[in-house]
Amino acid sequence: MSTVGIVVQARMGSTRLPGKPLLTIGGKPMIRHVAERALAAGARDVVIATDDVRIVEALHMDSVTVCMTSPEHRSGTDRVAECADQLSWPDDRIIVNLQGDEPFAPARSIRQLAELLAESGEPMATLVTEIRDLAEFNNPNAVKVVIDARGRAMYFSRAPVPWPRDIPGTLPVPVWRHIGIYAYRAGFLKQFSALPPTVLECCESLEQLRALENGFGIATAAALAEFPPGVDTQQDLDRANVFWASREE
Figure (cartoon, rainbow, N blue to C red):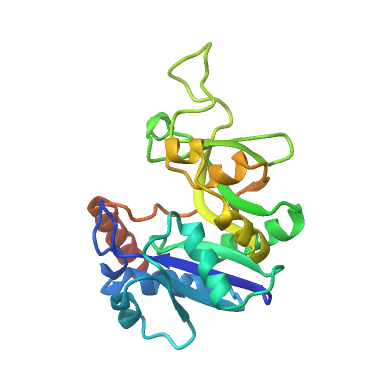
């Protein structure tokens, strides 16, 4: 991980949970939890990408760099691209894009993702986990990914795909849920951020489809360590606090 940079995205404008980065888990702002997970992965650089000074004031971490980014970015990947440009990272620098609402992201899987990108030869990589519950399969908030025989993503969707036509109401085997963590090289980020939003990206509201629609490959692998659910709603936050308390016992 000595050549890897981890960029944590953190913005205050969540529609479902306003002010999310500063909400507390176990008495500590969520953004500090995520930063600590990134540091635990052993990256060369850990950067917080934000457009709000309140997030900067809540960090108080000398080992973390802050990049103040434009509030006009169309996607999180565009925000990470601005950070790479501000920091003058070379084109071959591996960058892991860690969402600011993943307070329990396992360090082992963050390292796994960086290694996957380095070994795959693809410009982008991400992690997946198997869906074993029919309700999750049908949940539009759980993004599904269809994977080819070489482990590359073919499509991402909020819809239940692939659809088991002959036995509706059952789970296809296997079916994968996308974990919202990415890795790419800084040079690819420059290309990606220069591309206009695409039809499928806008339809599904999934930025990774911009890469696929433009012919870029995305390597995938099943996460070696499970990611506990991220925090998108008040219910998720309550569950995160319960989970944290159980770890403290």
